[in-house]
Length: 246
Image 1 (cartoon, one colour):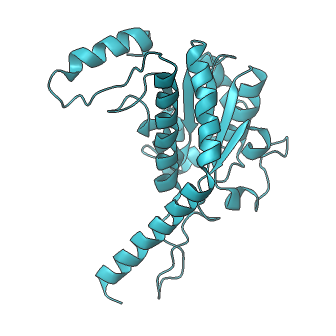
Image 2 (spheres, one colour):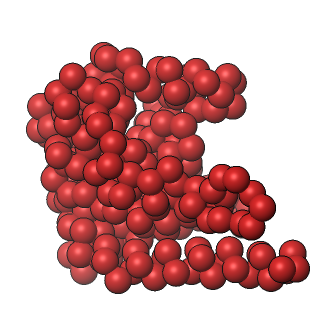
């Protein structure tokens, strides 16, 4: 097989995975959008959290062109990979971290929290879901059901995210995430979880914005800061919706 053919084969693999998402996840995506819409109506926020590579989903919909101002990304650098790659793996398995984060961000019963984790098994994402529910917040889990249903929980509750969340959305990544196989290579390649999860997250935002529009409510959406005149426009949104987070 030529290199170009291998590339096309992988792109078709991505396309097929995305088609599966479209065929199966529209209903839970709309349910998630409705929870977030209710939070917006109540003066709450839409918090998004993910550790490791899953943090990219939170970053993707937080303060960007076309992004909704009700979104607040929870992006602790300790759980990212850019400083020490293994650190986020170790910290994600600690008890107590998630509860502290929720307290720092002052999550309450007006809010919706989406937790992104492919496996949905580690202490921090599971604790995020459990503790957010105790605070009265709505919880959305974005996970791989193929992975999560085929591994044990690492949390003392023996629960995984899908056991706790009000809405669970399946990103349809396979167990282990990297499952594209190339002849002569001994392990899977081309993980899909970020590709589908980011698309799902953007679809949720589209759903929320549509609900706000249909209800006749303000739709605070950022413009690209690289478009002339956008800074002044965006500053008004920052002042209204972000305060000291600006």
